[in-house]
Length: 102
Image (cartoon, rainbow, N blue to C red; front, side, top):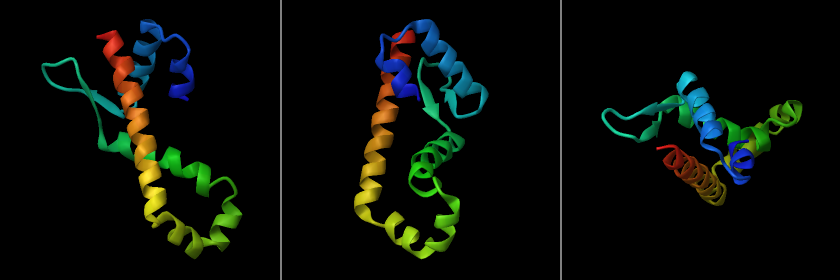
């Protein structure tokens, strides 16, 4: 959702508002004595769950019946590297938008 919101001319007020929502939920925290923010453990869990829910939880009844197949798919290296690339893209977009505020 953030990528969709920020691809259209990002405004500093909107970025600050979205960042404050992430901070309130404990997904991001500000580093001591700096203008940088880091993703917390809870934030990483949230990002991974957002990425995987589209693939595996669209139809939960089917997910239960195909549990072994889903585990094999999740362990595939190709899927993992794709997810890591998506996370890196998301983090770099957030980082660029936060730098606009600072």
